[in-house]
Length: 367
Image 1 (spheres, rainbow, N blue to C red):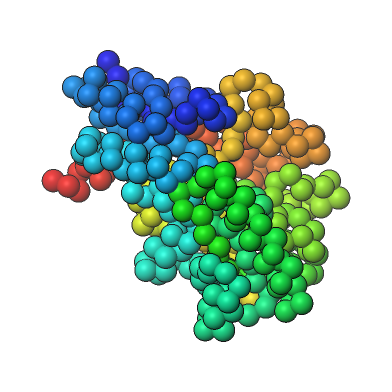
Image 2: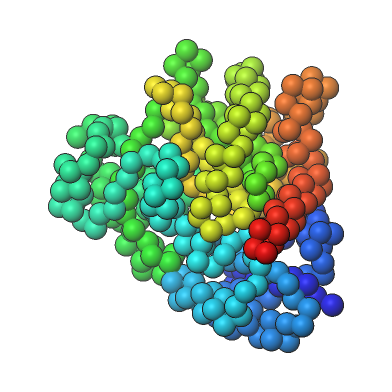
């Protein structure tokens, strides 16, 4: 009998509901899963009513960027009607913190989790008023609160850049609203934290994967010093030594700051996420940027979304070739990356093992 409801993205959207080896690992630790539409406002409740004698958990897995306000209210309504059902990834109330970056910032600020300074605004006059009354200075970012990978985000380095970038942002905002994208699309201004290593001429960011109160894996991403968006696809073989150095640093950071990183996820009402972190080069402190419950790992259908074995993700030819050629060396110096990230079977085995342990601990503390 079913133990877990997986409240997935609707069929109208990309079928990215189960990452490679994920479902097998979830069922190993939590029991048999039944898939249903998590975005239509009624299917989850209907499924629960049918199998409520055996269901113990729910995996809310809606689209993290495109879920609309109506669909989100449908999540909240069904969650309310179902009552006390343990969630594996997102609580519906916490999901707003996934999509709306400023909501996550608010919660983090209240819980003394370090983030960049920020404010929301609605037009150019509103921006000027809030900017003048903030501690933010040039350079800074203006962006949509619910876009990813640098899309809908603009770096404003000086006053002369502001007007043209605001114009671009307002255009993005209107397009989002016209297409009914997101729960509550907003314009936000975010403090720019300088993460460039000027001696090595690279920019650096980190993606960490957390389940419960343990880190599963993580990796560093580098780009050129002039590129403020450091993501995996920008790896170049000429920067391999720098990439290695920062991935060694990533493993050290995960050990040193594990409790702090896990807290950053838990206070948002979430259990299992990818989280983006940067380190400021002026104070060497970590800053939290956003969480991603559907972080990319690859999918069962080879080639879907350009995900291929042996690693599924990353699939970038330059990086894959480097990782294969240097395996004997790299698996010794960055074992967490090789054993807990590139090996997706082990990655998801640990993810749901840690999540099971965490939820069992929460159950024990309730009594």
